[in-house]
Amino acid sequence: MAGAGAGPYGSIIAEHFRRPRNQGPLPEATASAEVVNPLCGDRIRVAVLVDGSTISEARFVANACAICVAAASLLTEHVRGMAPNDAVGLGDESMLALVGAVPAGRTRCATLPAEALRRALTGV
Figure 1 (tube, rainbow, N blue to C red):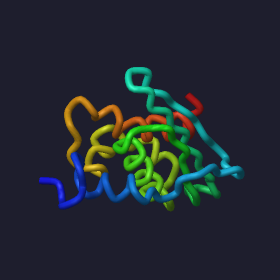
Figure 2: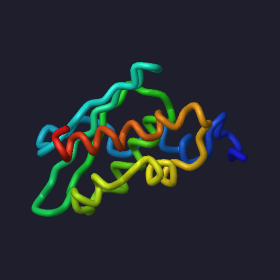
Figure 3: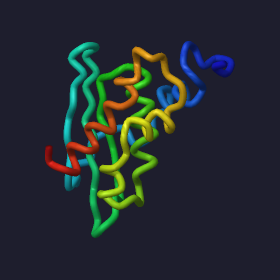
């Protein structure tokens, strides 16, 4: 059950939507990509700074729903210090584990930031 004041989503989503971490542009990014979910209009850009063999900085800019913003906030925190190849391997299941329970019809909202990260790091 969602925590008090969390609204329709869990407390993790509510907290990261209200106070997103790492939100804003990353002008010195070594890689970035933007993805859009045409079904709902969520748009997110994830940018990373790869320093040697490590992601030293990760940020996002989004015009998106609460779940997508929270997922991007959690993802950018999670990948700092990670090797780019390991970050590329973060699949949908990993994102859902980070975010927590989301309604079945909203899983795409939670996985969109990971797709942007994968595209940024692979150039696809």
